Image (cartoon, helix red, strand yellow):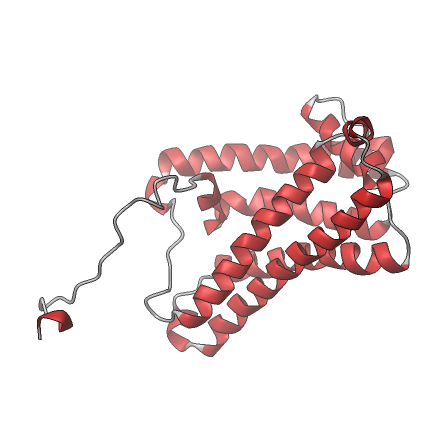
Length: 231
């Protein structure tokens, strides 16, 4: 029963919440579909933390696609040896994980250091950072510590095919039986994070600003019309 719940029922519960709640928020609460910036209150820490985090999360996403969504048979057909794959997975995944963790820690410290930022931080924002830190921390630990001390776990033969089987609605939950507990916790925490996306400002990830590089910069003007450039 435990195997059935965690590796068959639970993922679909989280996926359903993600899809339904995201649709509801987009249609009925469109004005909340934002990720309000606190840059106006503090810039230096945010610029470093945000850049490090976002680049790290992009690299981590690409790494998960390569390791989970692309079958191991594809790498074998391309002649990529397991040792080579794991070397780059540990090196690249480790760097990406550290970037995400460092970025999140800087964001969290920033919220405590600057009162104006702290005042404008909601409980949902704290949950997002802390839960992301938990997920990213576990992933980074597994990549850099577990795989180099305990042994390189071949998740491409268990977690990866199980995850892909969810999309065909034929979940192979038996593949998760022999997965190390730490990896299982990481997977469960990740699904909880997916389910929480519609209720946090992480929802803005579905609205990637394609026009951002070419759009006009946002301008701030004082209420009395004063502009220091006109002095």
